[in-house]
Amino acid sequence: MATQAKPHSFQDREYFPSFRDCPLEYSWDDRYLRKNSENASVNRKHWCLLGEIIEANTIIRPRIVAKDHKGDSFVVAFYADDQNDMPRLLKHFKVGNTIVIFYPSIHYFLDGSIGVRVEDTGKIQIIPLSFKEVLEMNKQVIQYIVAEGTQRKCHGCDSLKENLNGCGRCTLFHYCNKDCQTKAWSEKDHKKLCKVLSREDVRRMHFLKYGTYDGAISFA
Image (cartoon, rainbow, N blue to C red; front, side, top):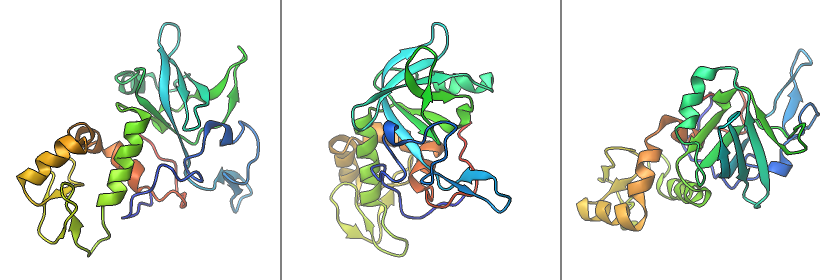
């Protein structure tokens, strides 16, 4: 799967659309689909819907209500093909966390609600951060991950230097010294973000080459 050295912005609406801007289920949408050499329908690109969980219910069937960056709410109902993957998601099945859905399409449920029907749970992850915190995490990754061959930027004091010490956990951010690391730990919330950024699935989201589709992403 194609990746890039430069992290991608989660606010790029071509690849991170609002719920209402996702394709309709069973409908053709040139923004998201194309025909391959065999005239079959395939994804044109990677796209991802982010939403903050405002309701989480597991009484009858795992079901979430989330709101997107516009504040519009949508349902996420799980009809998992692989029940063995559900514990991974249920671990963070909580109000206030952020759900990540790759390749979502708009589904109309029989009860009149509208949202996303999930059968392949491998295209889903739940990040134990609020939507605002996820965007701040992404903003910091973009700001401090510099191009290869250039001087690194201290996450604490913003100085550009050659010999900086990397964070031992997430490995993404670098520091002049312990004082700079302590400053970022508290003032830039790295205490909370570091644990999340050490997850391979979250890192993959940042560096995926969204415009190049050569197979579906999977977190299972």
